[in-house]
Amino acid sequence: MHLEFWVNIIVPIVAGVIYFIMAYEIKKVGQIRGLIFGEIGYRKVFSAFVLLGIYFITRPLQNIMGPHPWPMLINNVRQFFLMSIIAPAILVGIFYWDSDEGDISRAAKIASYSVGFFMAIIFILVNRIAIDGSKVIASFNGINLYDAVWFSLGQKRYELILIHLFAQFISPVGFFVLATAIVRRRRHNYPKDSIYNLMPLKWKYLEIGLEVFVISMLIAGVSALLGHYYTYLWMIYYVGAIISGAIELKSVKILPSSAPSDLGG
Image 1 (cartoon, rainbow, N blue to C red):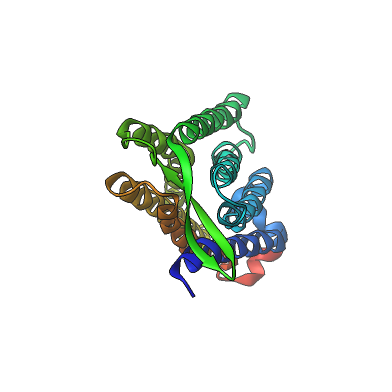
Image 2: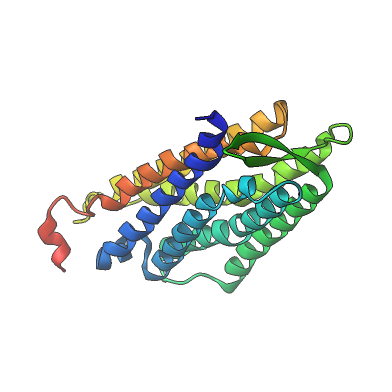
C-alpha cells in the first residue's frame, strides 16, 4: 500500500479516533472532572476534543473529494474550525479551569474567539491566493487522491508562506502555548499537602501532551518553510497529535489521589 495512503488517510483517521476516545474518557470520569478542569472548563475541553476528533477524521476528504478546488476548500473549512473554534475553546476552557472564581471575564472570551477568527480568515485568504492547482498523489483501484499545490503557475512567494505560518503560529499554536504555560504554573503552585496528591502528575501529562502538539506543528511549519510548501507536510503534526492524544489520555485516566477513599467526598 502506498505511503501516501497511510499518510493522508490512515494517520488522520487514527488521530481522530484517539480524540473521540479522549472525549469519551473525560465524560466518563464524572464528578472527578470538576477537579481537573472545573465544570465549565470541562464542557469546553470536552467539546474541543470532540471537534478535534472531527477535524482529524475528516482530513481524508481533502484528498478524495476531487481535484482543485476541492482540496483547498476542505482545508479552508477544517482550518477555520481549528483556528476559530477549537483552539479558542481549549484556551477558554483552561482559563475557566485556572480561575479561582470559577468564571472569566467576557473580554477574555471575546478576545480569544476574535483572534482565532481573524487568524482563520487570514489563513483562508492566503490559501485562496497561493493555491492554484492540485496534483494526483496516489491512485487506488481507479480512485485518485489529490493534494493542493502552491504556486504551480508562478514563482514561490515567501511572504505568503510567512503570513500563512504566522496566522497558524497565533492560532492554534500560540493558544496552545499559552494553555501549556497556564497548566505548568498551576502544577508548580499546587499545594503539596493536598489530599489530591496526584493532580500535579495528571497536569504534568496534560502539559507534556500540549507541548508535543505544539512542537509537532512547529516542526511541520519549519519543514514547509524550508522545503516545498505542500499540505502533506502537515501530516507531521497528525503524528504528533496521536502521541499528544495518547499522553493526554493517560492524564485523564490517572486518579486525582493515591488514596481512592479520598474521592468519595
